[in-house]
Image 1 (cartoon, rainbow, N blue to C red):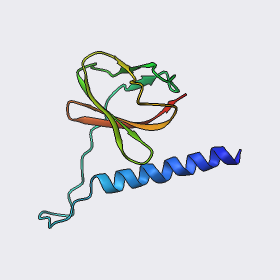
Image 2 (image 1 turned 180 degrees about the vertical axis):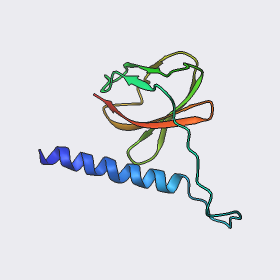
Image 3 (image 1 turned 30 degrees about the horizontal axis):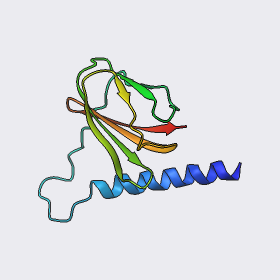
Image 4 (image 1 turned 90 degrees about the horizontal axis):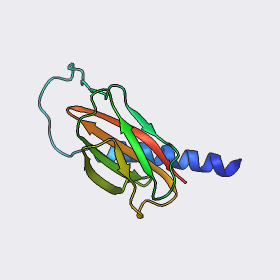
Length: 119
């Protein structure tokens, strides 16, 4: 049971680190701080099976099922895979071994991030 908690905390810490460092830029900004950021999410997003087997195939469906950019990161924030997906299915390469990953999907101007477990 303790092992599972360790991996959960490791995943959460790595995800928080990845999201905070990936988008930070040094420099000056101009504009108003009162404007709210608009983030579009992907409607009807479904990723299955999750967990998936090593060298397995995942299906990524959305409401519109248009072309998608798919990126997979390990829990340390390193990009493992970046690909353009024109179908619903993505075959995982052998470089993605058993573990916990972050999958980032972009479709049109919308983005979604999910946890992906590989067994």
